[in-house]
Each structure stands twice: as C-alpha cells, then as structure tokens.
Length: 117
Image (cartoon, rainbow, N blue to C red):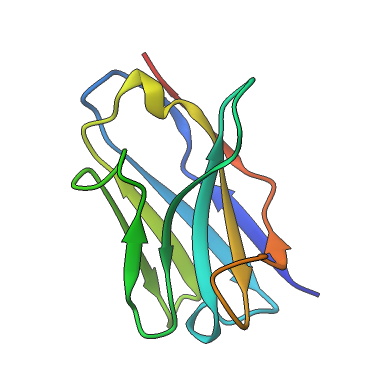
C-alpha cells in the first residue's frame, strides 16, 4: 500500500520561504519519478517540478530560480524548497509518484495548502 503524505504548507508573506515535504511509504522515492503539482481554486492543475531516477530535474517556468526539488533517499522523502514566494504561488500542493515515467502519475498525496499574501 503506497502512501504519500505532504506537509510543510502554511501562510507566508510575499518574499518568504517554505519547504514542503512528501514522506513516502510503500514506494521508494529513488525508484521512480517524483513530482510536485499545484492547483489553485478555479485553475487547472500545474506541474511545478519533477525529479527523475537519475536526479535530473525539470521546473515550470514560473518557478525556475525560486523553487528547488530534491529528495533524500535514505529518509524516503521528497522536498520542495520554495523561496521568494509570490501571491500567485498560493495553491494546494500535491506530491505524486510513478515507478515508470514522469507522466500519468500513479500515486498521489492529499496535498498541503500554501497561501502567500
């Protein structure tokens, strides 16, 4: 049984930072593609960043240079370091994983809310 549990969200002022955490069980973060998505009310879900099995990363243009995705294989945990936050970063952030590719993610967390004012 795979579980992905996000934490670290909260309310922060513009320009501030947050670090999101996704703790995995039943699935090794080292063995598949891990991604952070976000969705704001009334908007489509957006891929924020992903990290593949070779530790290659990709970011949405809107977060490049501000967000960093990384993982700790020993802790089986995925992170998203978010700096220089903007009000438009406000959304619910979800962690997802897939064992075979960076698409059609099979496993999802329930999300954590980020609010930037």
